[in-house]
Structure formats: C-alpha cells, structure tokens
Image 1 (cartoon, rainbow, N blue to C red):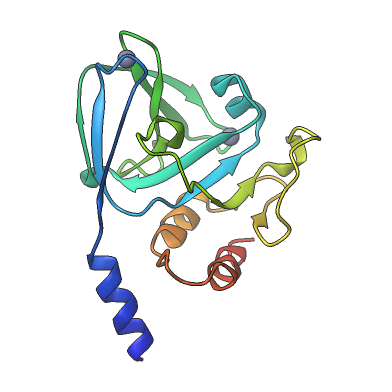
Image 2: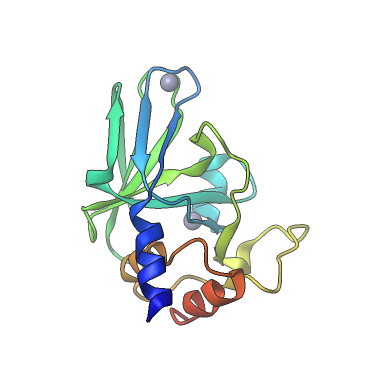
Length: 176
Ligand SMILES: [Zn+2]
Ligand SMILES: [Zn+2]
C-alpha cells in the first residue's frame, strides 16, 4: 500500500491557483487540483458562446473569492436548480453551483490565470458536440451525463492527478 501512501502525500501538496473575470473585478484563488471535464450540452454551448464548456469542480470552502458576483438561476434537466454566478461589471461567468450539492462549485476553467495543460478527464453530452470536435478515444465520454453527476464529480476530483492517464480514465469510466 506504499503507492496509496505516496498518493496521499502528493495530495497534501496542493498548490494554490488563481483566476478571475475578464475585467479583473472578480478574483479568486483555490487550493486544489486542476481536474476539468468538458461539457458539450446545448446549455453550455449557449452560455459560453462556444463549442463546449470546461468545468473545474471544487469544494466551496476551498474557494477564496473577492469582488461582486450576481447570480442567475435556471432549472437543470435533473430537476435541480443551477446557480450561475457572473461578474456584475463585465458579465464573465465565473462559476456554477447546483442546489443538489451546495457545498461544491464548478469553476469555469477558462477563467484560470494559467490555462495551459487543461486536459479534460471526461467529455459529457457528447451526443450534442460539434461534429468537428475530435475526441481522444482514451478519454471517458458520456452520451449525456453520469446519473449521479454530483457524486461522480466528487469521486473523480479525489483522484490523484499524477496517476497515469489510463488509470485515471479507468476510474472515471466507473461512473457510466
Ligand atoms: Zn469582471
Ligand atoms: Zn453542459
């Protein structure tokens, strides 16, 4: 079980990462890993004005945020309410949260200061992806989304990011 102990040791060495909105009025830091997934659903396409969204789930208590956010709430497919927070000055969407898991938020990963190496560990709502988006066959994909999205998110965020990609992907696929 030396491997597990090693993994735990690495997990404790979490680095602080920063991000913010387009105008700079909202800034945040979070202690954690940069585990992101891509969502190709129509809502994410509309919200981002792009082909897909990149989401970074993080426990709310690990997020330190300054600046004024406004919240717009919409009904999600699951029946939950999705709380969408954006900068009151420039309108950049900063994070989403679901009423089913109020202790978690998903950061819009494009707002990170450093967006290099944002490799999605899974693709959701692949059935509505843009046809020119070519997916790595090694990366988990869901036709729609995991049945227990909140539970799945928490499970995959707990995976050590320094595991080989194949091992992480195998764990992610368990959510299917
Ligand atoms: Zn702003
Ligand atoms: Zn989506």
